[in-house]
Length: 192
Image (cartoon, rainbow, N blue to C red; front, side):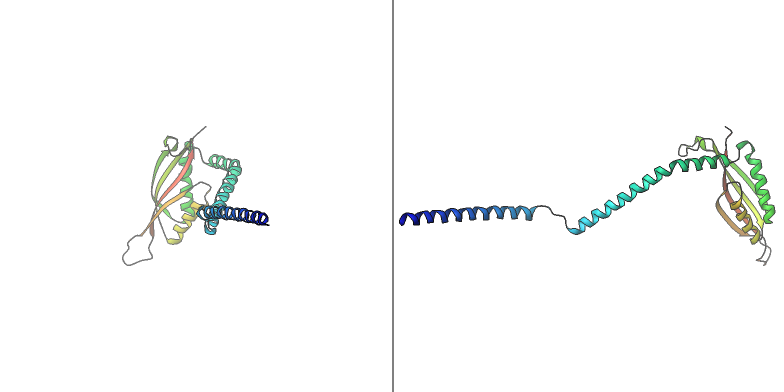
């Protein structure tokens, strides 16, 4: 019997040793899990948001890429609609005079300055000339408003950069004619 007790004792010690080794192994594994970097839910949500923003940017870029041929055609159509530089100044002057006449205002001064855009490095508008127009008109409020509206509706392309308004002094009469200084831009295309 003594021999059976020693075998049992050894078996118990082996099982206890195995349990102790398993406990030490689980302790090491638990320590590694607790010291490993982990990402909290807020960081996951922030990364998800960044991913969605990037996906939207990529989708937008793909849309722009798909629309590029139509945009190019529209730009070419616009450039072809501009008057030729050789007849542009006279047609522009006639157009402005016509708009002024229909609006009931008088053009007091008109100064024109041309810029060749093909020589400017930041603009790649080869074959186009930008024309700056400083214009002063006299008229009542309604006429000036119709003149600006006529510029917007004109078949020619005008950009109104600035308006400066002042009334002409005629004693105490505040309903006198207005004097409006305008800075406009338009474009002509060079002959091919």
